[in-house]
Length: 335
Image (cartoon, rainbow, N blue to C red; front, side):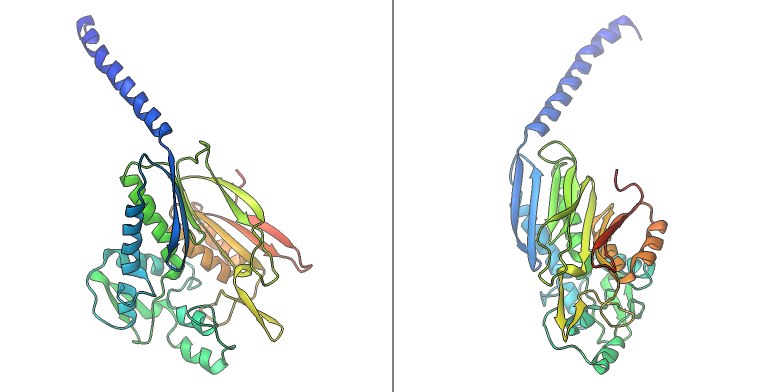
Protein backbone atom coordinates (compact mmCIF):
# COMPACT_ATOMS: atom_id res chain seq x y z
CA UNK A 1 0.00 0.00 0.00
CA UNK A 2 1.45 3.41 -0.99
CA UNK A 3 1.89 6.19 1.50
CA UNK A 4 -0.61 8.30 -0.45
CA UNK A 5 -3.34 5.63 -0.16
CA UNK A 6 -2.65 5.17 3.54
CA UNK A 7 -3.01 8.91 4.20
CA UNK A 8 -6.28 8.90 2.22
CA UNK A 9 -7.75 6.13 4.41
CA UNK A 10 -6.76 7.58 7.80
CA UNK A 11 -9.69 10.07 8.00
CA UNK A 12 -12.18 7.30 7.32
CA UNK A 13 -10.63 5.09 10.02
CA UNK A 14 -10.79 7.97 12.49
CA UNK A 15 -14.43 8.61 11.58
CA UNK A 16 -15.25 4.93 12.13
CA UNK A 17 -13.54 4.92 15.53
CA UNK A 18 -15.26 8.11 16.66
CA UNK A 19 -18.63 6.81 15.49
CA UNK A 20 -18.16 3.56 17.40
CA UNK A 21 -17.21 5.41 20.58
CA UNK A 22 -20.26 7.66 20.27
CA UNK A 23 -22.57 4.65 19.84
CA UNK A 24 -21.09 2.93 22.89
CA UNK A 25 -21.42 6.12 24.95
CA UNK A 26 -25.01 6.58 23.83
CA UNK A 27 -25.85 3.01 24.81
CA UNK A 28 -24.24 3.45 28.21
CA UNK A 29 -26.00 6.78 28.72
CA UNK A 30 -29.49 5.55 27.85
CA UNK A 31 -31.72 5.24 30.92
CA UNK A 32 -33.13 1.99 32.21
CA UNK A 33 -36.89 1.84 31.76
CA UNK A 34 -39.23 -0.03 34.09
CA UNK A 35 -42.55 -1.59 33.18
CA UNK A 36 -44.78 -3.84 35.27
CA UNK A 37 -48.33 -5.07 35.32
CA UNK A 38 -50.59 -8.08 35.24
CA UNK A 39 -50.66 -10.65 32.43
CA UNK A 40 -51.51 -14.34 31.95
CA UNK A 41 -53.01 -14.49 35.43
CA UNK A 42 -49.81 -13.31 37.11
CA UNK A 43 -47.59 -10.24 37.53
CA UNK A 44 -44.70 -9.23 35.33
CA UNK A 45 -41.75 -6.88 35.76
CA UNK A 46 -39.34 -5.61 33.14
CA UNK A 47 -36.18 -3.50 33.35
CA UNK A 48 -34.48 -2.56 30.10
CA UNK A 49 -32.13 0.09 28.74
CA UNK A 50 -33.78 2.26 26.12
CA UNK A 51 -34.06 5.93 25.26
CA UNK A 52 -37.85 5.61 25.11
CA UNK A 53 -40.40 3.40 26.93
CA UNK A 54 -41.64 0.47 24.86
CA UNK A 55 -44.78 -0.28 26.88
CA UNK A 56 -47.06 -0.51 23.85
CA UNK A 57 -44.77 -3.06 22.23
CA UNK A 58 -44.85 -5.21 25.38
CA UNK A 59 -48.64 -5.12 25.31
CA UNK A 60 -48.76 -6.06 21.64
CA UNK A 61 -46.52 -9.08 22.20
CA UNK A 62 -48.48 -10.19 25.27
CA UNK A 63 -51.67 -10.01 23.22
CA UNK A 64 -50.12 -12.19 20.52
CA UNK A 65 -49.14 -14.84 23.07
CA UNK A 66 -52.56 -14.68 24.70
CA UNK A 67 -54.34 -15.11 21.35
CA UNK A 68 -52.26 -18.20 20.66
CA UNK A 69 -51.61 -20.03 23.93
CA UNK A 70 -54.04 -18.85 26.61
CA UNK A 71 -56.21 -21.42 28.35
CA UNK A 72 -58.45 -18.65 29.66
CA UNK A 73 -59.16 -16.95 26.33
CA UNK A 74 -61.90 -18.97 24.59
CA UNK A 75 -60.85 -17.53 21.23
CA UNK A 76 -57.20 -18.54 21.51
CA UNK A 77 -55.77 -21.21 19.26
CA UNK A 78 -55.11 -23.50 22.23
CA UNK A 79 -58.66 -23.14 23.57
CA UNK A 80 -60.23 -23.75 20.15
CA UNK A 81 -58.13 -26.88 19.66
CA UNK A 82 -59.26 -28.17 23.05
CA UNK A 83 -62.85 -27.46 22.02
CA UNK A 84 -62.23 -29.39 18.79
CA UNK A 85 -62.95 -26.31 16.68
CA UNK A 86 -61.16 -25.46 13.43
CA UNK A 87 -58.20 -23.10 13.69
CA UNK A 88 -56.13 -21.07 11.29
CA UNK A 89 -52.42 -21.58 10.83
CA UNK A 90 -50.68 -20.24 13.94
CA UNK A 91 -46.85 -20.42 13.82
CA UNK A 92 -46.54 -19.46 17.49
CA UNK A 93 -48.78 -22.28 18.70
CA UNK A 94 -47.04 -24.67 16.31
CA UNK A 95 -43.61 -23.75 17.66
CA UNK A 96 -44.56 -24.01 21.34
CA UNK A 97 -46.60 -27.20 20.96
CA UNK A 98 -43.79 -28.95 19.08
CA UNK A 99 -41.25 -27.83 21.68
CA UNK A 100 -43.52 -29.08 24.47
CA UNK A 101 -43.77 -32.49 22.78
CA UNK A 102 -39.99 -32.65 22.34
CA UNK A 103 -39.42 -31.97 26.04
CA UNK A 104 -42.15 -34.46 26.98
CA UNK A 105 -40.35 -37.17 25.01
CA UNK A 106 -36.96 -36.14 26.41
CA UNK A 107 -38.24 -36.42 29.99
CA UNK A 108 -40.20 -39.64 29.42
CA UNK A 109 -43.46 -37.84 30.03
CA UNK A 110 -42.48 -36.12 33.29
CA UNK A 111 -43.34 -32.93 31.46
CA UNK A 112 -46.68 -33.58 29.80
CA UNK A 113 -48.85 -30.88 28.18
CA UNK A 114 -51.96 -33.07 28.58
CA UNK A 115 -51.79 -33.20 32.40
CA UNK A 116 -53.92 -30.07 32.93
CA UNK A 117 -57.22 -31.88 33.66
CA UNK A 118 -55.52 -33.84 36.46
CA UNK A 119 -54.12 -30.64 37.97
CA UNK A 120 -57.60 -29.15 37.91
CA UNK A 121 -59.08 -32.29 39.45
CA UNK A 122 -56.68 -32.02 42.38
CA UNK A 123 -57.79 -28.46 42.94
CA UNK A 124 -54.88 -26.34 41.73
CA UNK A 125 -56.17 -25.26 38.34
CA UNK A 126 -59.37 -23.44 37.51
CA UNK A 127 -61.09 -24.66 40.67
CA UNK A 128 -60.46 -26.16 44.10
CA UNK A 129 -62.30 -29.22 45.23
CA UNK A 130 -62.30 -32.24 47.48
CA UNK A 131 -59.65 -34.92 47.28
CA UNK A 132 -60.51 -36.80 44.07
CA UNK A 133 -61.59 -40.41 44.16
CA UNK A 134 -59.60 -43.22 42.56
CA UNK A 135 -62.42 -43.64 40.07
CA UNK A 136 -62.22 -39.98 39.02
CA UNK A 137 -58.44 -40.19 38.62
CA UNK A 138 -58.62 -43.45 36.65
CA UNK A 139 -61.28 -41.95 34.38
CA UNK A 140 -59.12 -38.95 33.54
CA UNK A 141 -56.01 -41.06 33.00
CA UNK A 142 -57.62 -42.28 29.77
CA UNK A 143 -57.03 -38.80 28.38
CA UNK A 144 -53.57 -38.14 29.81
CA UNK A 145 -50.39 -38.79 27.85
CA UNK A 146 -48.44 -36.68 25.38
CA UNK A 147 -48.06 -39.71 23.11
CA UNK A 148 -51.82 -39.57 22.50
CA UNK A 149 -51.39 -36.29 20.61
CA UNK A 150 -49.70 -35.48 17.31
CA UNK A 151 -48.84 -31.96 16.22
CA UNK A 152 -49.28 -31.84 12.45
CA UNK A 153 -48.25 -29.10 9.98
CA UNK A 154 -50.25 -25.87 9.77
CA UNK A 155 -51.37 -26.00 13.39
CA UNK A 156 -53.43 -29.14 13.03
CA UNK A 157 -53.61 -31.41 16.08
CA UNK A 158 -54.52 -35.09 15.98
CA UNK A 159 -55.90 -36.39 19.30
CA UNK A 160 -56.74 -39.99 20.13
CA UNK A 161 -59.82 -38.69 21.91
CA UNK A 162 -61.72 -35.41 21.61
CA UNK A 163 -61.63 -35.24 25.42
CA UNK A 164 -57.85 -34.75 25.44
CA UNK A 165 -56.86 -31.18 26.28
CA UNK A 166 -53.54 -29.44 25.69
CA UNK A 167 -52.39 -27.13 28.47
CA UNK A 168 -49.20 -25.27 27.58
CA UNK A 169 -49.17 -23.18 30.75
CA UNK A 170 -45.99 -24.83 32.03
CA UNK A 171 -44.03 -23.52 29.06
CA UNK A 172 -46.03 -20.48 27.91
CA UNK A 173 -44.81 -17.95 30.50
CA UNK A 174 -41.20 -18.80 29.76
CA UNK A 175 -41.91 -18.59 26.04
CA UNK A 176 -43.57 -15.20 26.51
CA UNK A 177 -40.37 -13.99 28.16
CA UNK A 178 -38.41 -15.16 25.13
CA UNK A 179 -40.86 -13.32 22.84
CA UNK A 180 -40.34 -10.09 24.77
CA UNK A 181 -36.56 -10.54 24.71
CA UNK A 182 -36.66 -11.01 20.94
CA UNK A 183 -38.77 -7.86 20.57
CA UNK A 184 -36.35 -5.86 22.70
CA UNK A 185 -33.35 -7.01 20.68
CA UNK A 186 -35.16 -6.12 17.46
CA UNK A 187 -35.42 -2.56 18.80
CA UNK A 188 -31.75 -2.37 19.68
CA UNK A 189 -32.09 -3.17 23.39
CA UNK A 190 -29.19 -5.28 24.61
CA UNK A 191 -29.56 -4.91 28.38
CA UNK A 192 -32.80 -6.22 29.87
CA UNK A 193 -34.48 -8.36 32.51
CA UNK A 194 -38.02 -9.64 32.00
CA UNK A 195 -39.84 -11.62 34.70
CA UNK A 196 -43.29 -13.15 34.19
CA UNK A 197 -44.68 -14.99 37.19
CA UNK A 198 -41.21 -16.03 38.33
CA UNK A 199 -39.89 -17.06 34.91
CA UNK A 200 -37.01 -14.77 33.95
CA UNK A 201 -35.03 -13.96 30.82
CA UNK A 202 -32.00 -11.67 30.96
CA UNK A 203 -29.57 -10.14 28.52
CA UNK A 204 -26.56 -7.85 28.78
CA UNK A 205 -25.97 -6.11 32.09
CA UNK A 206 -28.00 -4.57 34.90
CA UNK A 207 -28.12 -0.84 35.69
CA UNK A 208 -25.02 -1.43 37.85
CA UNK A 209 -23.17 -2.58 34.69
CA UNK A 210 -22.71 -6.11 36.03
CA UNK A 211 -24.49 -9.41 35.23
CA UNK A 212 -28.02 -9.66 36.55
CA UNK A 213 -28.36 -10.99 40.10
CA UNK A 214 -31.26 -13.42 40.43
CA UNK A 215 -32.18 -14.77 43.85
CA UNK A 216 -33.41 -18.31 44.49
CA UNK A 217 -36.02 -18.12 47.25
CA UNK A 218 -35.52 -20.13 50.41
CA UNK A 219 -38.36 -22.62 50.96
CA UNK A 220 -40.77 -22.02 53.79
CA UNK A 221 -42.47 -25.38 54.21
CA UNK A 222 -45.29 -24.23 56.50
CA UNK A 223 -48.19 -24.07 54.09
CA UNK A 224 -47.97 -20.32 53.65
CA UNK A 225 -45.61 -20.28 50.65
CA UNK A 226 -42.21 -18.60 50.70
CA UNK A 227 -41.35 -15.62 52.90
CA UNK A 228 -39.05 -13.92 50.39
CA UNK A 229 -35.77 -14.93 52.04
CA UNK A 230 -33.06 -15.63 49.46
CA UNK A 231 -31.29 -18.98 49.58
CA UNK A 232 -28.77 -18.32 46.81
CA UNK A 233 -27.92 -15.55 44.35
CA UNK A 234 -27.07 -16.40 40.74
CA UNK A 235 -25.12 -13.97 38.55
CA UNK A 236 -26.35 -14.60 35.02
CA UNK A 237 -26.84 -13.02 31.62
CA UNK A 238 -28.06 -13.95 28.13
CA UNK A 239 -30.21 -16.86 29.29
CA UNK A 240 -33.54 -17.91 30.73
CA UNK A 241 -34.13 -19.07 34.30
CA UNK A 242 -37.19 -20.67 35.87
CA UNK A 243 -38.03 -22.14 39.25
CA UNK A 244 -40.70 -24.68 40.12
CA UNK A 245 -41.38 -25.41 43.76
CA UNK A 246 -43.84 -27.54 45.71
CA UNK A 247 -43.42 -25.35 48.77
CA UNK A 248 -45.12 -22.53 46.87
CA UNK A 249 -48.44 -24.25 46.24
CA UNK A 250 -49.88 -27.09 48.28
CA UNK A 251 -52.62 -27.81 50.74
CA UNK A 252 -53.24 -30.11 53.70
CA UNK A 253 -56.26 -32.37 53.88
CA UNK A 254 -56.84 -34.92 56.63
CA UNK A 255 -53.33 -34.35 57.91
CA UNK A 256 -51.68 -35.12 54.57
CA UNK A 257 -49.79 -32.67 52.38
CA UNK A 258 -50.67 -32.52 48.68
CA UNK A 259 -48.26 -30.73 46.34
CA UNK A 260 -49.36 -28.97 43.18
CA UNK A 261 -46.96 -30.98 41.00
CA UNK A 262 -48.87 -33.92 39.54
CA UNK A 263 -47.14 -36.99 38.13
CA UNK A 264 -48.74 -37.62 34.72
CA UNK A 265 -47.94 -41.34 34.96
CA UNK A 266 -49.75 -41.95 38.26
CA UNK A 267 -52.28 -39.13 38.38
CA UNK A 268 -51.12 -38.39 41.93
CA UNK A 269 -49.16 -35.50 43.49
CA UNK A 270 -45.44 -36.25 43.59
CA UNK A 271 -43.96 -37.44 46.87
CA UNK A 272 -40.23 -36.81 46.97
CA UNK A 273 -37.76 -34.48 48.63
CA UNK A 274 -37.29 -31.79 45.97
CA UNK A 275 -38.67 -28.54 47.35
CA UNK A 276 -37.67 -26.44 44.35
CA UNK A 277 -35.92 -26.87 41.02
CA UNK A 278 -34.26 -23.90 39.35
CA UNK A 279 -33.12 -24.37 35.75
CA UNK A 280 -30.88 -22.11 33.66
CA UNK A 281 -31.13 -22.61 29.90
CA UNK A 282 -30.44 -20.76 26.67
CA UNK A 283 -34.15 -19.89 26.43
CA UNK A 284 -36.75 -19.38 29.12
CA UNK A 285 -39.32 -21.71 27.55
CA UNK A 286 -36.95 -24.65 28.03
CA UNK A 287 -36.04 -23.57 31.55
CA UNK A 288 -39.76 -23.32 32.38
CA UNK A 289 -40.65 -26.77 31.05
CA UNK A 290 -37.62 -28.63 32.42
CA UNK A 291 -38.02 -27.14 35.90
CA UNK A 292 -41.54 -28.60 35.94
CA UNK A 293 -40.27 -31.95 34.67
CA UNK A 294 -37.55 -32.12 37.33
CA UNK A 295 -40.11 -31.58 40.07
CA UNK A 296 -41.94 -34.66 38.78
CA UNK A 297 -38.86 -36.82 38.16
CA UNK A 298 -36.99 -36.41 41.41
CA UNK A 299 -33.28 -35.76 41.80
CA UNK A 300 -31.74 -38.93 40.37
CA UNK A 301 -33.68 -38.90 37.09
CA UNK A 302 -33.23 -35.15 36.77
CA UNK A 303 -29.48 -35.61 37.06
CA UNK A 304 -29.60 -38.11 34.20
CA UNK A 305 -31.38 -35.58 31.99
CA UNK A 306 -28.82 -32.92 32.91
CA UNK A 307 -26.01 -35.26 31.90
CA UNK A 308 -27.56 -35.40 28.43
CA UNK A 309 -27.88 -31.62 28.37
CA UNK A 310 -24.66 -30.06 29.68
CA UNK A 311 -25.82 -26.74 28.21
CA UNK A 312 -28.44 -26.59 30.98
CA UNK A 313 -27.69 -25.94 34.64
CA UNK A 314 -29.87 -26.67 37.66
CA UNK A 315 -30.04 -25.79 41.32
CA UNK A 316 -32.17 -27.97 43.60
CA UNK A 317 -33.30 -27.33 47.16
CA UNK A 318 -34.07 -30.61 48.92
CA UNK A 319 -35.69 -31.52 52.21
CA UNK A 320 -33.82 -33.79 54.62
CA UNK A 321 -35.24 -36.57 56.82
CA UNK A 322 -34.44 -34.41 59.85
CA UNK A 323 -36.73 -31.66 58.58
CA UNK A 324 -34.01 -29.36 57.30
CA UNK A 325 -32.87 -28.54 53.77
CA UNK A 326 -29.86 -29.20 51.59
CA UNK A 327 -28.91 -28.28 48.03
CA UNK A 328 -27.53 -29.85 44.88
CA UNK A 329 -26.29 -27.90 41.90
CA UNK A 330 -24.90 -28.64 38.46
CA UNK A 331 -21.17 -28.59 37.94
CA UNK A 332 -19.99 -25.08 37.22
CA UNK A 333 -23.07 -23.26 38.47
CA UNK A 334 -21.17 -21.83 41.45
CA UNK A 335 -18.99 -19.93 38.99
